[in-house]
Every structure is written in structure tokens, then in C-alpha cells.
Amino acid sequence: MTYPTSDGLVPQIAVVGLHGHGASHVRRVLELQRAGGARLAAVVDPREPGPGHEAHDAGAPWFPTFGDLLSTPSVRVDVVVLSTPIPTHLPLARAAMEAGIDVLLEKPTAASLAEHTELVAVTERTGRRCQVGFQTFGSHALSAAAGVLARGEIGDVVGLGAVGTWVRTVSYWRRAAWAGRRRLDGRDVVDGVVTNPLAHAVATALRLGGATTAQDVTWVDTDLYRANPIEADDTSSVRVQDAHGRRYGFGLTLCAPERSPARVVVHGTRGDLALEYEHDRLLLRTDAAQMDKTYGRTSLLDDLLAARADESRALLCDVRDTGAFMRVLEAVRTSADPTPIAAEHVLWRGEGADRRPVVADVERWCAEVARTQRTFAELGAPWAS
Image 1 (cartoon, rainbow, N blue to C red):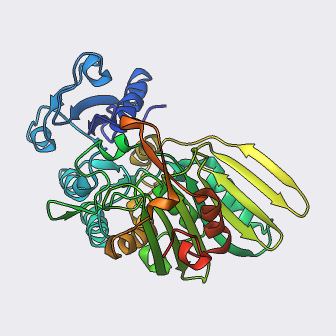
Image 2 (cartoon, one colour):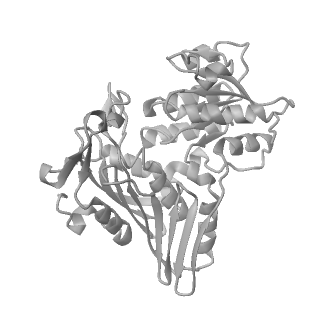
Image 3 (tube, helix red, strand yellow):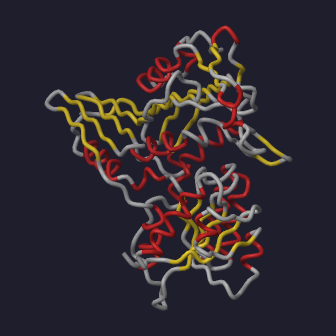
């Protein structure tokens, strides 16, 4: 697939942030390059990629800062992929769009609702596109699930939510200075379970329920905890109500005994729907039938390039459509600090960098939050306040 620019040239893509998830973006751009659909024009990271790194081996020019790239007129950039720390999202995306560059911005969109509002204003002022990296919005299973609800196959929706029971070791919280922080050097970070690792669960459930803008959310209740010695939350429940009166319950943890597939759930009067979004798997159970089907997925980078080639095409995850998620992030950001979970409810496993906490019976409580749209505290979880 080719995505020519208005002058017929192959799109030139820069990737900012090469380590961690940024490496997967480099690989995707190089796949497009080999197919003739795009070109890796430059990479940006404080650490220069050495031999063995795909960006280095591909011969892509390296710049230590995004400013260095923008001040080099000999390097043309049409699209930039930003896979950088949360506090940098707004300034980097703003600089890119003001320079006439379209953006694929990793989630979460920004560090506060105010920053999100400013980012939307920049897109409207510059006329540039800003796609946010909620990859699940490109899942064909999500559109299939929306069709199931629209056709009333599970009856009237009585509740939505998500269950995420993942595992993170202490090395995860040591990966960067901002990891597990609520604020750093006077700036919001908000790097907790709700807003970063399991942000897809929250954003996808809201999208499926029809809540996309900040105005679509009427209220948010947070119930935040931590088993790790960090600032942010690693085990939390959140309850949301949207403008249509639908309620959502999110039961999320990074302190499970084992990692299980994260899932968005919808409960209806005649059945239930579960979307295991990591695997694009849709499970439907109604009074009349059962279904278990796996779907494909559209890359959000490919979608952005296609939208650049066809101005009438809407983005799958336009920055404007992440306002509802940002209302949840804002509630987490402005909440009281997470409550430490008492030691008698936590079992530590592993050694050294692989050491990790397991919260007692946390999987069951997370599932109950999604089923009832009630918080841990309301449900009476023994470690909740």
C-alpha cells in the first residue's frame, strides 16, 4: 500500500523515542519502507542508536532532540511518531503540528485535561492531523462489537466496564525517572495503572459505550491503591457515568498472580459481550447463541497515512475522540494519593528485579467492579478503605 503526499512523493516519517515501545514504531516504518509506502526520514532520541538497532542499521539520520531535527531543513518530515514520556506529549506534538507535520502520538494523550484541550486547539488552528496511539481503536473486533450493540443482540445495555489483571515487576517501575510517578520536577506525570498500562481498557470501553468527548462524561469516581512503593496507583477501581446515563466499572491491577487477557465487558438484559482487545477477540453470549471470533486490525500509522492521502477520511483515533478518556485521567490526576495496601494482603514473589507483589484475590474483585460498576471500597474488598 502506498500513501503519496500531495506532491506525489512517498511520506517521510520520523520516530521520536527509540527505546521501549518506540522500537516497534521503527519496525513498522521500515516495513512500509520496504513495501515502498513510506520512508524512515529520521530518528530522535537522547541516546544514539548503535549497531544492531534497526534505526542505525537502516541508515536513518539521528538527532538528539526534536528541535535539532526541526532546525535541519535538509531533512523533510511529513509525519512524526512520538513515543516519549507523558509530560512531553503536548510540547512535542504542538511543535510538530506548528511545523506542518502530522502526528501519531502515543497514549495517554496528555498529562491533564487542560493539556488535551490545548492539543485539540493546536490541531484546529494548524489544520494538522493528530492520531493517538490507542491501537484498539483500529481493531475490527471493536467495530464488530459496536454492531452487536447497535443491533440489540444482547438486549438493553445495563452496564459496561473492563477487567485488567496484569503483572509488573519492580524493574518496570525502575525503567525511567517518571515511571510510577504522579508528578516529577513540578510537572504532572500520572503514570499509574488506569492512565498508562491499562489505559486501553478504559478508552476502549468508553468508545464502545459512545463516550468520546470530555462532555460525554458526567462524573468519575476513583478508588486508587498501590502495593508497590511508588507514588501512582497499581491497583484501582474507577466508576464512570456518561451523558446517556450508562455506567462503567473499571477493575484494574498490575499485581495479579498471573497475567490474563485484558477485556472490555458489556452486560445486557439478554446476554453479555467481552472484547479481549489485546488479541482482537470477541466473545458473545446471548439467550439464543454464542460466538467466539478473532478479527484483524488496522495499524494506526497506516490509517494516518491513508487519511493524509484522502482528506475526507476520518482518523480512527483522532485526538478529539480521546476527551472522555482524559476526563478519567483528570479524575485520577486530581484525586488523593493512592492508599497503600496493607502488608497482610500482599504476597511478594520473585527475587531482585523480578520481584513483584500479588494482591490477595485481586482478580475476583476486579471482575466484580466491571460486573457491578461499583468500586473496591463499595464492594468491601478486604484491603480497600
